[in-house]
Image (cartoon, rainbow, N blue to C red):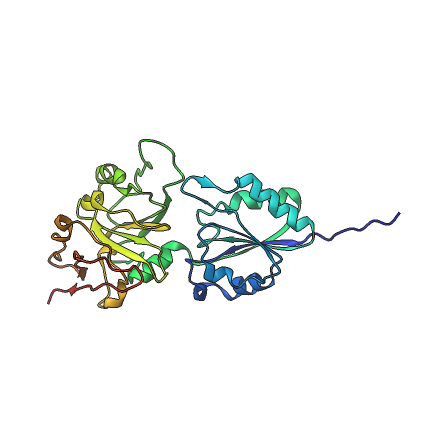
Length: 295
């Protein structure tokens, strides 16, 4: 009796970066062009998915805003199913797959099933956001520590448990800060951060419609809602700024009482004054900003 044996395919867990196709790695782009199956996160930009051949099977398996298209276990089963058919499978994740991307769970499932896989790194949101804002994440004069935290990791009602993470010489990067980032303010202050600690909220970093809002820890309760994905940077480095209007593509509208407080503090590097606009500005247009510096 003749039997057909299929050589198992391979799974590539690929980082898509912040969304701009030009920020993909060369290897990621090549794999997408040759994939048989692509299982992608919900926030992967259409621009990136255009690289996938028309003959490939493309499925959105993302989870966002507490809405799951498919469970994490279901994603793993699909990866294994397609690989066992001898197909080249790309699991496409936003940013870098190893940073809050649940790649560990998928790698465990593939190992248990005996499926070969490879990790292709991507530009994480923290690096894309810092680059867009033209700020360093570490600076020997200001921040010697860098901490990444995911707001989705903890379901405790009493906060993320900052402990000794929140110190004046630390840059805190909060992935997926949620709609109410202000709920962490009191705990962060109790950990030693001052009310004037600079904060930077960045939405859709690296894309044409990115938005940036500069504020302080005390004023964080005034932050408006911004489109996902978003990221919050706290620490002294968030108050630095290069002398270029191009550093902020779009400034979000803020309440007048908050905008009135945007005068630069003596000794600061540079500060963007966020102003009220009488007419709504489309998010893809550059908003006017004014840079202030001390002589």
